[in-house]
Image (cartoon, rainbow over all chains, first blue to last red; front, side, top):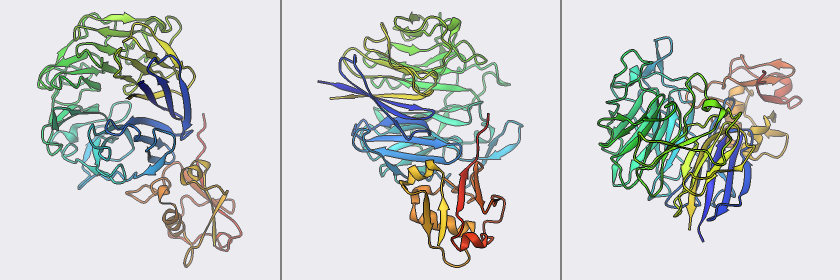
Length: 371
Length: 99
């Protein structure tokens, strides 16, 4: 019988939640690395018992961990993330140029086919690759050397590369997103990159239609349709049908189109989930009611999903990497909150329950569907 | 022999069970040579105390010994005699996060 393993990164450690395919009863293991900020925990699709962890601390910097037994035991792996070649500069808050400075890894994207290959998204923005299971890391430096890079500047959360998506039909094609530079695409395995932000409109930058400078919060793709991407921007939910060449807004009838997380149903490429957040000044749900919104038409028409979610006095946030779906026949949807709950739906969002209530603030949620 | 005390997070990370680590350091021990010896013995600590690129002390790490804050001393200055003689430990401390 199938089972699922939910990998949760929090402000104070990592947790592994396990259930059988019914997803009714959950075993909670952890905290692993207690006291450390765990920005991301992600498993290898090629070897699900291999799990990579970004472990970080304002005091002690970046550490990386790996499990080869499904999260029971862990070993430190390489944590040397050196920018390749000349470091270069980017724009700082005061308008001056400041050298790139490594701070942490926000996102880990293991290869779909090779358990030893994993990519990492860094703050200050850069993408790194390991081909030896995380022992050593090499920057794909063309991104940071893009002509527009000196104009990139950090958003309030830092200049982080937080999204890495590989085209499952074309291994040379990579999509990334950076706060607050925007989305970029490589068609040659990371040797060159182009901004893909046409159609984004951001009123909080001097030129609302600029080529770069947009605060993209998250991208999501269904593997069967890699030219279609969905985006939760700072404000606005967006969609492209041509791999980012042009975007159009699909916020439609959402009550607010600010938010962080976005994901796609495992079996329905036009079913999309977001968690609307009141505003960029008030990072909590509208009216104290936690509502996931689902579109079954690829955008514009949205329905609130509320059954089992708190509908009063709820003032949590759902961060950009804190939503995931499983691959079971009835698609499971999962998200974590800054209040420490992880909510799960085993019926594509119709009903929800908290599978754990009182973790530290959740930074990331991934789910593995196991045979 | 130099005695080094680490914050608990770093002891956990390096799987050090004792409170102190004893290091043999050639010549007049300095912050730099002690940290070199520490990182050689526990490679997982590379980058956790000193920045990998600049080699500088991480901002929220402090070095204390003999009731003195040595954090702003030159990394190449000899440590106090009591540390070099093994009578006092060299303390690596995570700064207090108030609030």
